[in-house]
Amino acid sequence: MKNKLKNKANSYFDRGNYKKAALIFEEVYALDEYNEKIMLLRAARCYELLKDNKKAILIYIRVAKEYAESGFLLKAIASLKNVLELEPNHFETQELIADLYAKNGKIYEKKSKLKTFIKNDTTFKTKEATKIEEEITDAESLIIEGEIISKEDEFLENEIFTNEITEPAPPMRPKAIDATTLIKPLPEIPLFSKLDKEAFIHLMNKIELKKYRKENLIIKEGDEADALYIILSGEVKIIKEMSDESSMEIARLSDGAFFGEMALLGNSQRMASVEAATEVELFIMSREMLDDIINKYASIRKTLFQFYRNRLLYNIINFSPMFQEIDKDKRLLLIKKFRSKRLFANQIIIEQNGELPGLFLILEGKVKVYRFLEDGTRQDIITVSRGAIIGEMSLLKGGKPMAYCSTLEKTWVLRLPPEDFKFLKKNYPEVINYLKSLKEDREYELDLLGKLNIGIY
Image (cartoon, rainbow, N blue to C red; front, side, top):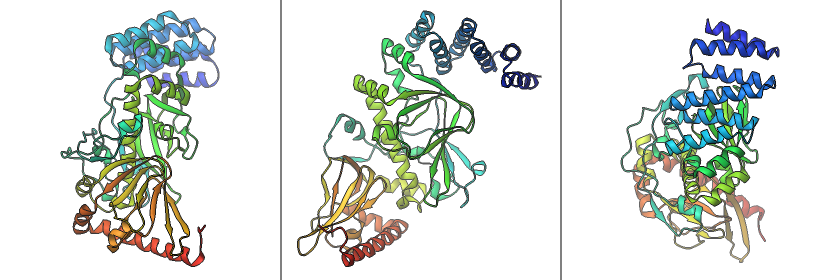
């Protein structure tokens, strides 16, 4: 009965008969008021298109109140945002938003989980992927080194990994460990819960509300970052382009999660594509709006950069070739041996013919590798960035570093001290084999550079 009515209403809507569509949407809602509030929202949209804003506003407010009474505060606020888009100075709506905010202190709703997908075969198929839904656990034991060099760095220089990890669901294959168990839990919409009432109402008046249909592309990998996105309802897929030009669905995010902050806060290009897995409703916060909030509210800045740090770690742990051949328990044990360090631009990490401080894994930033030849001329070798490993050649050969490694910008690295490299050699043959292969490739490249005199000045 309901499905037939829905199909009929959608058919009228698609043909532009909004009056009949609205009446049937309202009829479906009357049959099941608790589960079919979306039908009432569609009726309101019909009245918008009929230019009957007064009726649309009444419905949006009604739905907002029902969502709030049921505890779905994000959905309530989204419905009220529709009112403000029709009538920006609508007093009752501003009062309702203030009331929601004052009553609850927090306006985010139920706990959202990151749904990580495991690649179950060499040919990835989303429908065959196995979902792992685990709550993100606390993290407390990575040793922190170095100075804090800016306000955001203060929030990146926190302890990262825990000695006690909740037992995860068993992975389908070792190469796709559920690394969400390594990351601290965060409130879904900390940007909102940290604002005072006046700032929150101001934000609601400015923030953009946008809807996407299933399979619509929201973010494209490689594009410039211009906004942060907050999921009010629905689910999105995070899709990563792989080195063989295939694409892989690496995660799903749902109600309350936010995305797009990685490229925005790191001033880089989008690192993955985001596609609507269902119909999705989003708040979109522009770069200018986000910058303004971060500058005004230290607590929001702290939460955002904490989340930024955690996502960097998640990506490195899941996709660095160094970790791909070891299972979860061994991966956790190894990662605890690393130490986190934030560095200035133009800071030397490794000095040619100097003491080697360890093995480095770059989480964020760029590092220039160069050397001085016997005649004193400098030869630039390569510039490496996120995910790269440096220091393995000297550790494996047992000699002095053959080149300088210097940061080109503020950089965040994980460092494995030389004394712990012995532990790595003894217990992780898979990692050592990968590092040996990397060393051989780099020795070949160095030999070729030397013969061709490339990069010398």
